[in-house]
Length: 141
Image (cartoon, rainbow, N blue to C red):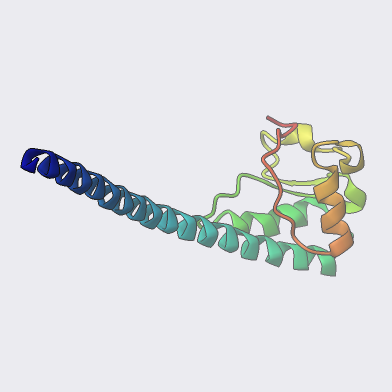
């Protein structure tokens, strides 16, 4: 009988140890994920701040040409960011691009006709705000 009670106690202790171990593992993973989330959130917010500055410039110069757009956009890429390229789409058609090299195929893209990006583009226009959307397959690859 004593052996039976000891076996039951041993099973109970083992089960409790597993629960504690699982909780510690879960807490460790959660802590690591929170660090990654905070870094990602900081990167996104930093990129949005950079883009907001360019958006403000475009708003004050609605007839901005490619040369002026490229000069302003180049400053965004001097900062540490995850931006690859940036486009301007007056009337929802891309006519401004930086950098131009490698992104030529995107020129002329009409967001009203692009199923994958239409809703985000319309929402950005209608709300007059930056919209984070994606992932999307870019026409320029």
